[in-house]
Image 1 (cartoon, rainbow, N blue to C red):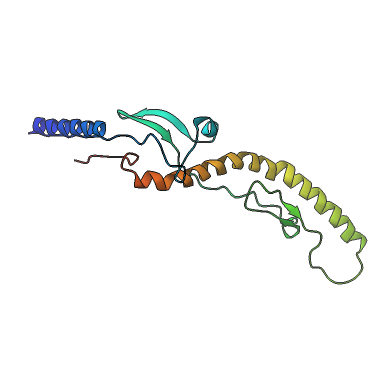
Image 2 (image 1 turned 90 degrees about the vertical axis):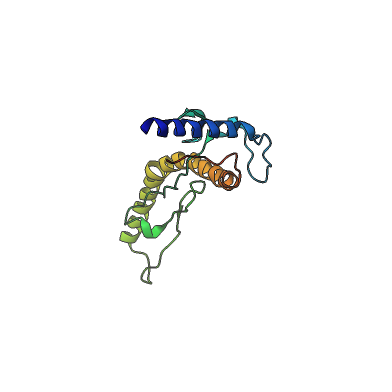
Length: 164
C-alpha cells in the first residue's frame, strides 16, 4: 500500500508540473499594479531574485517587513523634541515648552544649552544611524505593498501546494 501512495503522490506532482507548463506567464504587468526594473530593486534589504527552492523557480521574492520606529529620545530631551515617523524627516527641536511664567533664570539658560547638546547627540548617534538603515527598509515595504495585491489576484503568481 505505501508504494501506491508514493505513486499517487508522484502522479499528482507530475500533473501539477504539466499544468504549470500550460499556463502562460504574464510577461507584461500593467503599471497600475506593479512595475519595477531589477536594477531599481537591487540593493533593497531582503529582496531576492532567481531563487530555486524545492524544484521551483522563484523569479522575485519580496518579504513582508515591518517598520522599525525611531529610537526613543532621553527622558530629559523627550518634551523638547518632535520625532517624525518617517526616516526622511529629521527630528525637530521645539523652540520652547510650557514652563512657569517669569524671567528665564541662569539655570534654565544652562538647561536649554544642555538640551541642544542632547539633541545634537541624539540626531548624530541614534536617529541618523536608524534613518540610514530604515530608509531602504521602507522602500522594500513600499514595493511589497505595491506588489502584494497583484500577486494575490493572479493565478500565475499565487503559490500552489499539494497536501496529502
